[in-house]
Image (cartoon, rainbow, N blue to C red; front, side, top):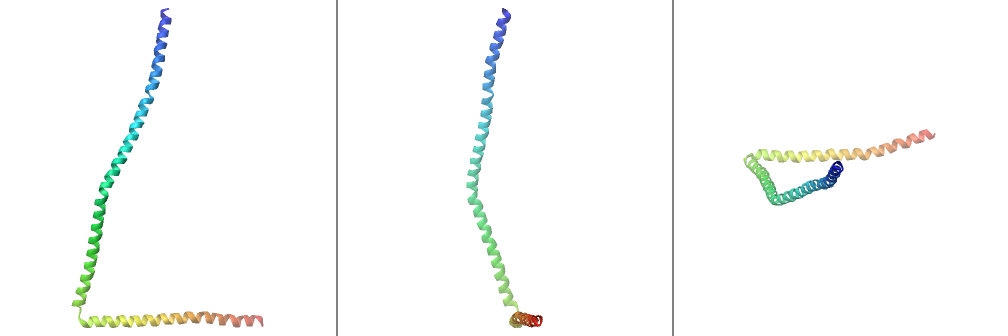
Length: 138
């Protein structure tokens, strides 16, 4: 009899332990997943807040960089041009102007010759096909 009592008490304890442990396992998993999800959400919110605070500073720094780069390039170009035009002797300036004028005229003449060749080429090819078709027909 003692054995049956012990068996029942052991089974009774096992039955009460098993459901209790089965119920206990999902809770830690759920709480771990819940904590993980909450941590991810909190991290995302913190990152968004930090980015919103940093964005104006980054925009301001970028605008300053663009401004000073444009200023430096413009200053250097104008300074060099002004210095060159005031220090170069007049004979060199007039020689440069004459060379630019002569170069422009030569380029325009060359382009006109190319246009004339292009216009003559289709006329010559149509003349060549005309007599060859007559010779083939005869």
